[in-house]
Amino acid sequence: MTSKTPAAPGTHGAVLADPAPEQGRPLVELRRAGKAYGNIRALHGVDLAVHPGRVTCVLGDNGAGKSTLIKIISGLHQHTEGEFLVDGEAVRFATPRDALARGIATVYQDLATVPLMPVWRNFFLGSEMTKGPWPVRRLDIARMKRTADEELRNMGIVLDDLEQPIGTLSGGQRQSVAIARAVYFGARVLILDEPTAALGVKQSGVVLKYIAAARERGLGVVFITHNPHHAYMVGDHFSVLRLGTLELSAARPDITLEELTNHMAGGAELAALKHELAQVGGVDVDALPDGAPDAARVPAPDSAHRTHGAHGTDTADGSDTADGSDTADGSDTADGSDTADGSDTAGRTDSTDSTDTTDSTATGTAEGKA
Image 1 (cartoon, rainbow, N blue to C red):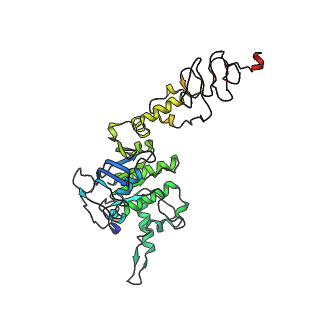
Image 2: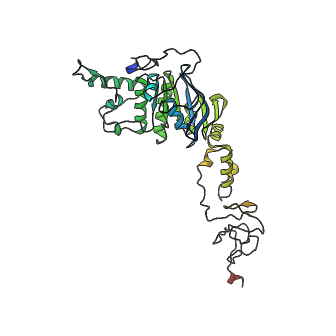
Image 3: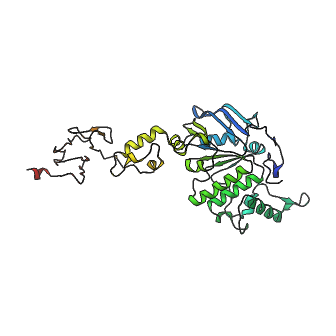
């Protein structure tokens, strides 16, 4: 098999499925698909189409349904509603091996590699090449090393020593080896489960580079991620899941990164977050655009024992404080009014059980007033 042929796979590239899909027909398609575990609907009414030579990004927060979607496409679980089509044919995979036979390969986050084994052994793990007559066939080590080196180089991956344990490679390099392995064994649809989640900026860039390389080789790539910035760098189509349903389905020309981030985080949640940040001194929320990802990175204060006495704002427990209004502990905060412990507050103060004051606040004890 030549790795440059994105044909349907089998053992070492034997074609078992449609090698030349109709123009415009998706390799894999979900129509109103869903999955229920007893009374719990993990996925409901999801549409997804994976085309050759395109990267389809599936985004969502934890619990959005991304893992369930992967399990349906990879054959680990069966859908309980809707349709699942491969090459236009309705299918229901019984095992992941059925998905592999139709050209659907999944690279999971843990990679399923053996850290102490050499790179070439991990490349062929479970599908080793052999030579010699049966029943005394033995591993064809020289051929496996040569083939692994060629296939890695075809993907732009150059390793000095294939004998080194794969555990000594960086996270990005291990992901790249897993991608090259899937391509070699004939994958037409490549599912990548959070490949950049545990990687730094540089190594994430390495993985994104090889995702683009897989697209150039004609594969249909499903890129599962919670990072809209990574998705927007390589994605052609974006599907955002939220609580098991499809929040957004848009092509790249139809959406900006800011809009994608807003859908990913939830516009209502970001608006609520900006409102909370408005209560924190030193944060200029007016300078933050709506749905700004920077806002999500600002740590929220510990408000379990704090109430804010800003004019007309809400306290941590939902009570309102204004000129002459009561704080959470029952003390009055106003210009010159007495707090519960007898201290005077002037200007804008934060009233807690111990009454915090700002730089412009004059405080005095009950004895001082006397």
